[in-house]
Amino acid sequence: AQKITQTQPGMFVQEKEAVTLDCTYDTSDPSYGLFWYKQPSSGEMIFLIYQGSYDQQNATEGRYSLNFQKARKSANLVISASQLGDSAMYFCAMRALADRGSTLGRLYFGRGTQLTVWP
Amino acid sequence: DAGVTQSPTHLIKTRGQQVTLRCSPKSGHDTVSWYQQALGQGPQFIFQYYEEEERQRGNFPDRFSGHQYPNYSSELNVNALLLGDSALYLCASSLPNSYEKLFFGSGTQLSVL
Image 1 (spheres, helix red, strand yellow):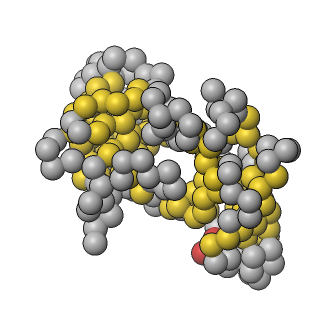
Image 2 (cartoon, helix red, strand yellow):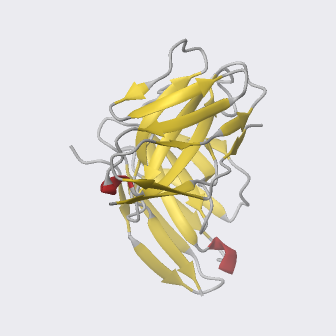
C-alpha cells in the first residue's frame, strides 16, 4: 500500500519569497508517480507538477519545482516568487505505475498543507 | 474546451435518503474516477469507471455505487445516507494509461443532516 505524509498543517510566506512544502511517501512499488495538486477554496483540485520515480531530473513547471530525493522518499514542492493567488491548500499524492491491475488508476493523497501568502 | 463538470454543486439530504451525483468528463477523456474528501482530509478513492465498467474500487461499502454511460459521463449513487457521508465528492477524468495527471471537477458538497 502507498502512504503519503505531509507534516505541515499550515505554512506562511511573504509575497515574492520562495516556500517549500514537505512531502514524504512510503511504497513497496518499484515504479510510481508523484503529484502535487492545489485546491483553492472553490474546491477544484488543480494539477501542478508530476515526477516519475524513474525520472533522473527534478520536474519543473514554471514557478513550481519538485525536489525529488528517492533515497529519502521525499518529494517536496518548491514555489518560487510566491504570489497572493498561491494561497490555497496543497496536496501531495502518489500513484503506482507498475501494477496495471488493482492500483493503476488510483491516487493516494496526503492530508494537505494550507499555504497563506501575505503582502 | 470544457473541463470536468459536476452537478449539483451543493446538496442537503437527511439520514437514510439516497443521493445521485453527476459528472461529465473532460472532452476526449473516457476514464472517470470518484473521490470523497472529508473536511480537513485529503481525497479518498472511491472507484474508477472505464468502458462502462467499474475497474477499481477503494475501501467503501456497497452503499456506494456508480455508473458510466456510453458518452463517458458518470454517476455516483449513495444509498442509506449516514452523517459520516457528509463530504466534498470530486470527480476526475483521464485518458486510459495516462500516468501524469487527472483533471478534477469542482466537486459536489454533500451535507447529511
